[in-house]
Length: 344
Image 1: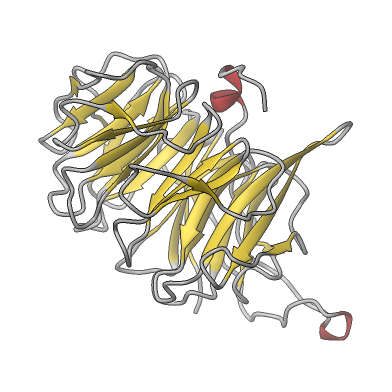
Image 2 (image 1 turned 30 degrees about the vertical axis):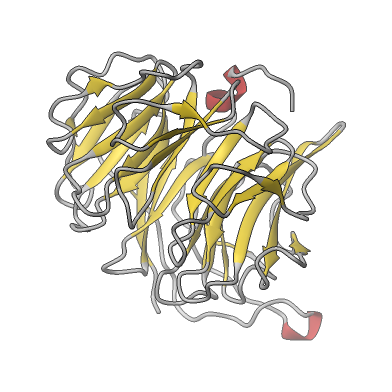
């Protein structure tokens, strides 16, 4: 992937939900009874490229838009208010919430990093040390929340050890300047994964050094997920460029920390994948947000089905799961935010 950073916000959108019958004789998934339908939430005129849910209060949501606005909901998306006082940017690309103090939020934008310490009421630019200001991904160490990572478009990974006040490059071993996604392992916080345009890199020392994983990636990796109950399982969404077809999205899975990988695109639409989330209580249930809607797997990513009933905007950029009710899913799309609650 070459360095036209405009593709970051022009190539991210989508959503979907469920109604399917499967022919077991043909090796597709078994049928699931009932119909679950997406509902559009009131934030319906915005292009929402990033979502975050408060880890301590599942009714609190944040939605960032392509034109630099941030909205907050305190009632599970029924109503929204603007929450970007002091944030001066034209593109909001990433959000990360401190797991220990959810009033502290970080926003990665086209103009650097902003931090709020009061739940989004006020924001302050905290980009000291950043040598590029296009921040497309962010992650917070769950054990040491003062440690924060920022993935940039143009200068790799940056790390802050003082809660975002200052930043230093953390690129030793990374052979690319374009970092699309970042994830801290929830089981071993010293392990960090970076999805790039050249595959997935792993650090075992909180970003001091990195090594390329033996991952079958030939395109930008825009989403990474670690199994919430299975420490050795890693999933990532890779988008391979195919001339004449643009990007072909698929999901790679490893059950042994990346030593061996299995590729799967069975049931996926063959379009770019921007988001990947795992049900926190059922590691075999996963969702992928693509440019063709939302897709669900109930076998750990081997097979996928469309779950787009009621989803009128199928360019999906962001997905989040309600941790208190993991059957509830929110999707950020080119036509606002949608919500669905699946029947178990």
